[in-house]
Image (cartoon, rainbow, N blue to C red; front, side, top):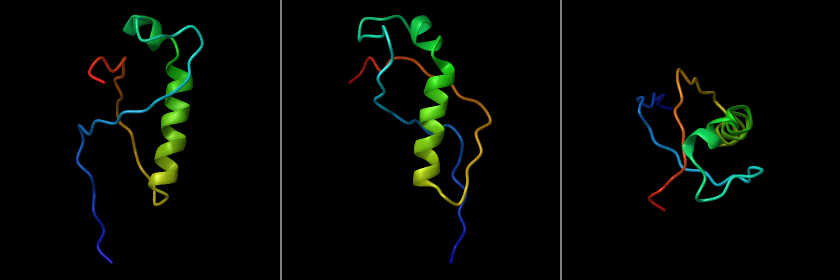
Amino acid sequence: MTHIKLAPNVEFKMDINLDNITDTSRDYDVQQHKAEIYQEFEKRLAQAFPEGFKIDSMDFGLDKQQ
């Protein structure tokens, strides 16, 4: 078995339903849901990487390039 470590600056995209947020909302409005977004993101990462992961920092906003 080979152990690998993924480098930082990896971009993830995720669909999530947030109250009162639409495709025309501002990033500021989306960022008010940081706890919900982080919780869902962490849940999905745990499923994908059961061996573990560490997040040092996180930036997020609406994906305008869908």
